[in-house]
Length: 149
Length: 149
Image (cartoon, rainbow over all chains, first blue to last red; front, side):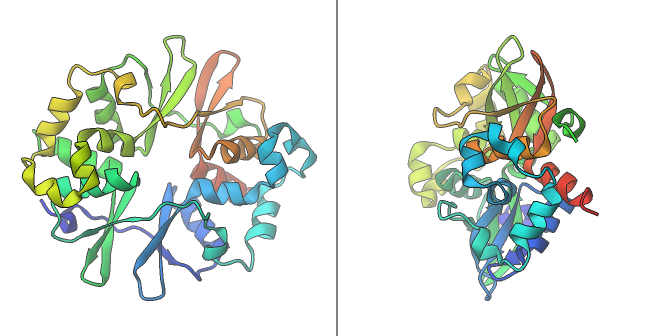
């Protein structure tokens, strides 16, 4: 089994995509994260849903969540205020890990090794210069266990 | 909206649960992670699917994924060999972040703040001593956006 056979479609955004639309994609598809590419379609980062949540909460409330009560409760307003007109690159954290990138003909063990090395919950599968899909860690476990029977 | 209304059922394991069964749960339900509790049901850690993948790959292959080819390709065999007879506590990484724990009557902003502070992709919701469910970061975004319309 090769990476291209394991890969699944996965919403992709680029660094200059609208941050509010990226939040919509995460929410609608209930995704733990999105693959972020450069304008040429090469994976540059993973945008975890948790990073978007983090971006919405002011630093002083992160430091002391008991202060959350002083904010207006509408998260919808916060999402609109903080994300409208912003680009995905502005929401990415500097600490964001490199995305795991694997080749279409990599084996399942190679995919696991790359994912493990980068501690990344998903791997982007490239066929040459083209992103053909994504393999999540749970998808990898599912395939590994299924093929063991 | 309070945390208890946002919470969803989510598979839970405890520190002494069978590691192979935990991998099955992650795979079958395609989950990014599991909540791990102590024997009293208090959340102690998150077990990310990526950590299970990491546990399956030897350190020297993580350091140099090109060595993956020297392993027998069967990930199913690796899963059986490395996880059988092991407990979840043995698979957890020492670097695993604390789980975000919120109270049933916390507001959505308080949940977001706690998740943001711990950089955790999900929050366990407690009603007193009882775990009533889990809120993922993408669920939080979904609810926040839906209630904005």
